[in-house]
Amino acid sequence: MEHFKSVGRLRFRLFLFVTWVYSVVGVSLGGLLNTIWHTHYFAWFPAIPIYYYVLCLVLLAFLEKANRKHPDSIINNYMITRVVKLILSIVFIWLYMFFVRHQIRMFAITLMIFYFISMFIDTYIFYLYEKRRMKKR
Image (cartoon, rainbow, N blue to C red):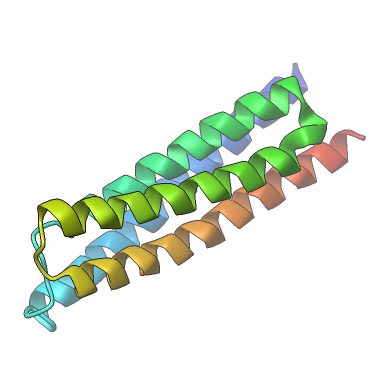
């Protein structure tokens, strides 16, 4: 029973952490772009933090499910999620370039900033899952 409580606490803490990071960074960067660098602000800016927030929540759910079924393969699953996130980000930039075509350079730079932030968050999530897995042994 204690194991399920710790899993729930970790999942809840990670959910709060991810929500906090994307909210703070999204609002801060959006505010800076909208006020100080208003010539660089683009209408699709809110889509980027929302996109990475959803991807991060999917990663959390995927890692949780994979950790329950095959705890020893979490490294492989983590690397797969990183590759998928990179491919989806490239597709997201391509779709923006193809359909919207407005301030493509600023969109790509902003998307890459959020990509690196998401890589940091993913690494932290993986670290916590590995720490929990090693504690069980």
